Length: 416
View (cartoon, rainbow, N blue to C red):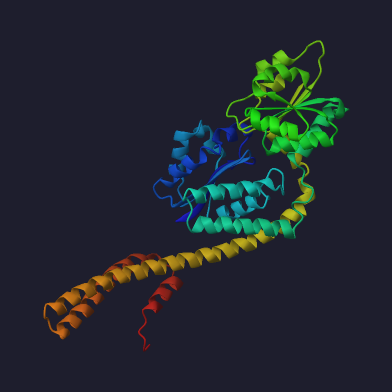
């Protein structure tokens, strides 16, 4: 059995591919159960964020059965397959360590991904989908992330999505403080957007979302206006900046809605930041005059240009990661050895217990002690050697000389 990861991320696939493979938090437990029930899969963890969907498993190296399951459960997986990566053993281990420590993020060094990895681990653990290998691997990844963040500058002054969003908005509006902003959603990114807008002196902010109770509370706590989501088409036209980040599986703002919101006489520009995956805003909106639409991938391209300032921190992080990979592989080898020893002991115990039961019956039936001892010795010798010798004949020809010699040395006589 090997540790594998099958997935897509912001490096391997554009947003129109990634959004087809997103699992919302309600569908993850069922997905875990389904994957765990695939023949050959011992353990599974599923990570699904706006920038990645990754399935970590302990199973055989062939992930074709998992891809087949994806094809049956997600949209257009055949279109997605060329964009997937499939790593095993050391590559899979290194990939997770890179993800948890922020090295593999679109925003290098960002903190949010570690929390998302921990959440994925907790859900898998709660649903009894991890045991030994993956449980230890993810625990190692949390330790790696802590070391990378405390011993390098990878997390210092990260160029965040919100910082980048404000930069792009300011390129369109000379005086951002005089503009009206509409934020769609109520999660962490939207609450962060409100703080960034307010720190840039935007005071007229309206929040809209599906859950009016939660939305109105967040709006009140942050000094914003609130509007129910059903009124979204009516209020778009009165705003200049729109930032959206929801878990909707279909676009919330369509091209038709946006067209009807544009006042051709006024010709004022709209800046729309779409942080949703799947996207909240139909991409065709970017074709409209005076509408500046930026997806999460557009922000990523801007962020990419700022990567060099953290190159040294990334190099230091990779040294820590390489060291921890060796550490984990040592644990993995020891764990496999311990499991093998346990299996062998259980095998011997079963044979011994059966022979002893028969020997006791012989004693109770009045057979001589010499006959019982002879039976016991002969029975144990035959049962212990028959299976072992047949298996040794199978594996010795395919082993290298050094390994074959080590196995032969196990059976040296005590007086040699």
